[in-house]
Image (tube, rainbow, N blue to C red):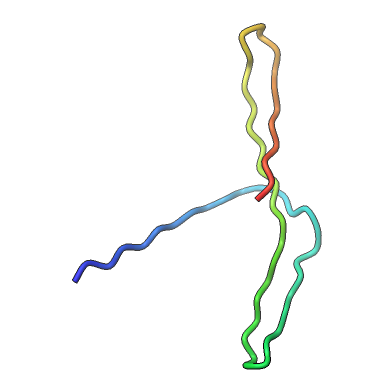
Length: 54
């Protein structure tokens, strides 16, 4: 049997404080927004910074 595992690593800045929810079973879930930036130069030679929220 083959086990597949995907892994993603995002490095960025938190958009707000993490929200932690505790369920009746005792398990917890943390939710937060994360901003990542991409910098590049366009055809005119101008520096462009794009922000994506995850």
